[in-house]
Length: 375
Image (cartoon, rainbow, N blue to C red):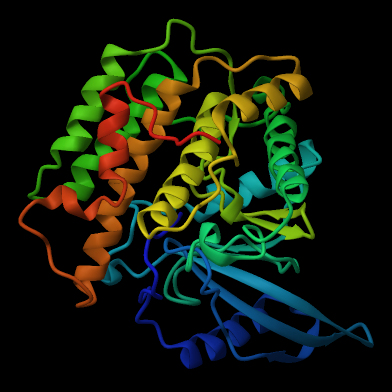
């Protein structure tokens, strides 16, 4: 989940010191054979993310006569009082998805260690996974501004692009019918995974908008109905938040694929469209400030060609999924704005669609225009 700002936003009101003590107490109970449990100070990543609360910490303990421990990441449900981005944070689904992907594919994901559904421990359900070292294309400031990726050679950027598409190809090779993936299906009306996926987004919008209406979002929903694909294709395990900002890279190779809270079953084009659109989102921000951006990077035609080469399956028309990604991200941005307003960092404008940073891009897409500049 991304944020568009050029400044760090407030994410939580939870006390880090109190969380540290509670986390240590929980580990003591979780590791019955351990003694001398120690937990470091807790920090949170600042370059990306604004949805689930993320805690980075080290832990050490004595067990079976040996000193054990490591570096870990805890993902917590956000405090409802902090205006969360999504209405539901199912930590068990995220945990099970991580383990499913680890067991059934070669997609690099952190080892999922422990799941705690009892909110008594830290005040919310959470899970703990191993921390993986690497560098991430940042959201703040966006990687399209002046980052290690934007400064890299074109060949290195292309290597990262192709490696990211390879991650999706490997993920989509998991056969949902051959594994227990039913927990990723939306229990909603609709005669196909895509119909149920869109229905889930309609309900998300109704929850997120509160007493407001966003004309550009409602227009986009109508556009989807008018341009529904003739063939949806088989459902795959969809990462959901498939963007390079959710990958830790070792050099230009993926070291860990993160953030599975939007995972679901759906057409493979969901991930491809989101990957391409999210780059367009950050690239447009760069160009609005007068920077050249990275218009050659993650173009839909290049992504589709690489994906087809790796899988033998040519993606369907990505235009529908490009617009759908823009719609989905617009809903998220309205909720991100609601959170900023909650923390006193902004106010609602008279034209509520102004809180959608990519409004102009989405409007052009709905008019049938290609908002991407020439490469």
